[in-house]
Image: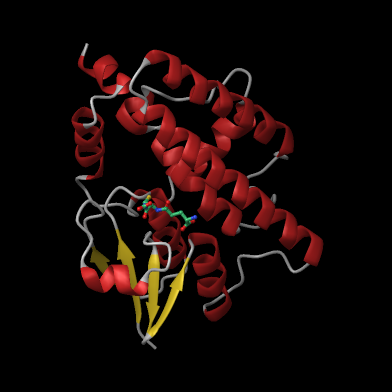
Length: 219
Ligand SMILES: N[C@@H](CCC(=O)N[C@@H](CS)C(=O)NCC(=O)O)C(=O)O
């Protein structure tokens, strides 16, 4: 079976799949597209016209959470709880992570301080809720590393961009989130889940869109 992951270089949702694949040592082909000018073949195969798309031989899968569950099902030791309720709760929290990724994007892409602060406040409140959900770790479910970890890792990766310049994690009030985040960022599968030029591409996008976050970096 051949696996091909269709990617955009700064997309955190693609990063989830890349982390799962690397963590499980699975070989795959990585194909980059430019979302500003998507090729026709991509528009043809992607129902929501979004990345990630996973090609499994000639079949098409989309949606990062679904792709990760499939990848987990077909490879190695399972990264999902066996208990049905625990598994469902993990899925629900992965959805929270998706929402938080959306708020992170909206915060960094905000054109003015007011919108930046609006999305920042939403994220801080979500991080506080996450802090209450976490146990003693080391991972989201305790001892067992899971797809919840591979789904949240890109959020923390983006939180750390520009030397934590826009981090919403307060180590004093969110010690569990802070420790979990740093543990995830230290994993090779997470470190190597983006291209080396990730940060410069991301910052260039902030500059190009004339964002409030860029004016703060440039000041
Ligand atoms: N719910 C989707 C979200 C994927 C997503 O938003 N991808 C963005 C890039 S990071 C995208 O392809 N955007 C293109 C568009 O919306 O036209 C998932 O989890 O896979």
